[in-house]
Length: 134
Image 1 (cartoon, one colour):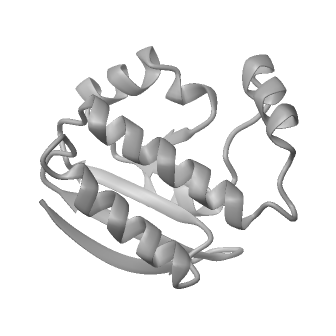
Image 2 (cartoon, helix red, strand yellow):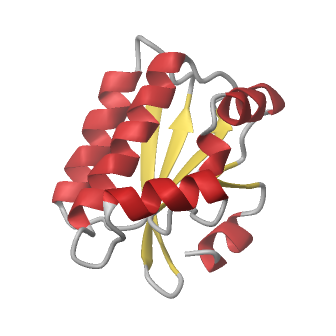
């Protein structure tokens, strides 16, 4: 797997992680370490581009959820409480303002949807629309 990083300017600076290769049990640690390194370096809004990553395993899902938690932690002063966020997720009124996904394959989209990630993450097929959503 290869990870390319770029920055897009919207209302806020958005760090884009372009994943090339499957996000699975052999690659998730590298992916998660890179994202955490970027967050520690100041990234506050992350867009994960999966156009060249047709397969995401349960390990990949866990790493994306961990990144979601890391971003919420650095935004703790402006974020909802965990209880309020859980209520919003359950009610369908909360979507992460800090993490979004781009260019999911049909298979990956089905996995993210069936595991409930669509309840709190937004998926986009167009980078401009994704950037505008931050």
